[in-house]
Length: 173
Image (cartoon, rainbow, N blue to C red; front, side, top):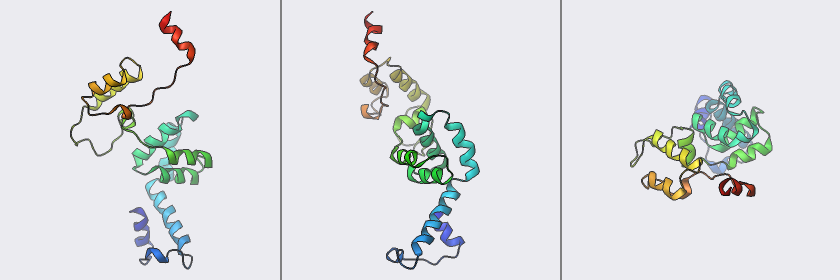
């Protein structure tokens, strides 16, 4: 929609898709795409939010998911804009494009999705409590799904980090 707004603001005539590759129109379309990214992700806003979210290198996924949710953009648009503003390099941009927001991310990071009124839903605080129990390995995946009253599937639960082999001795001894 922001791209189409650019067409309107710059008094660009409507172009059918099959003519985009002719007469340098693709360069104009690329400029309009860049305009749209600047409208959706303003530089000052990105600077203030991204720095706070990106405290550790391993937080790239979490930062991208929260940023995309906050600005309501897809990961490809976010990756391209962060690359334009030189907050990430090509390798990290490729990683950002592969990230997908999961249901567990929505609950754990308290993201707004616009789907809060769909039924059935549980209170966000309750879902966060159950996920906390699951992440602490206090409850098994099947029990977590049961506590969610079967509104979740086991494959929607976050992946737990693998423990080193020596961890067995903390349980056995």
